[in-house]
Length: 306
Image 1 (cartoon, rainbow, N blue to C red):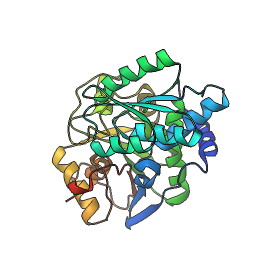
Image 2 (cartoon, one colour):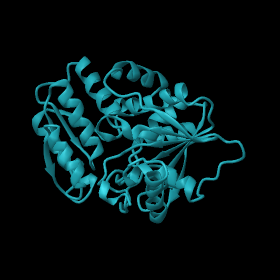
Image 3 (cartoon, rainbow, N blue to C red):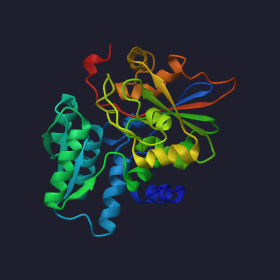
């Protein structure tokens, strides 16, 4: 099971007009932000959700039973939004620890919301059981080819929007985003994953030589809270030479605060992880290196920004 650059290009055609072509801004010479937190539902996730659902519709697999998904919040929002736009019901399983703003948004999107367990993995098992019982379409948060290809459309946009660049920094949870972007980039730029020290799914897999389970915690766990990297992401990391950097809790909190105070970007902790690698010095560009940071999610409580 792999995803190709052609799959990403096909996804771009399929979802055109249903997702936003999010802007890029040059923060300073050599540093560009891709503002994917301005996407529908506040994260990059609708790209993969629409590609999964529209592909299933083409194949006659999207029925009146609708969609079942599990999520820490953002993937569920995307699934609910795409399902509503396509006129099918959505049933979303989220951990009991999911942030209240995300749960409230899910309900405004007319989804049935079931809170269960303390982390994503438990919600996912419940979603799989519900899918098997109902016959609905299962939308995985990160480890389905159509989902990865949809997320990869961000990379295609970057190649068109950002001019010449050398490196893309991408936050990693389950890995759908970095798998898609690495596939879209090919040899056009190096792609580096940035992970919280308390949820290092890719880092752990690269060290072990295969995806492995591990504990999940920290301020970014609501959006980067997978126990293990997806198989597709691990395969893409191996194929395209993606490496992983780890950032600590204090660095994530500080980066999020700076994104708000200095750049007026209201983002969740997971979306500050990639920027934290730069601000903390975990990643130090060489002279003249041009870096893009993907700012990937905005579903947060504004009261916590300062």
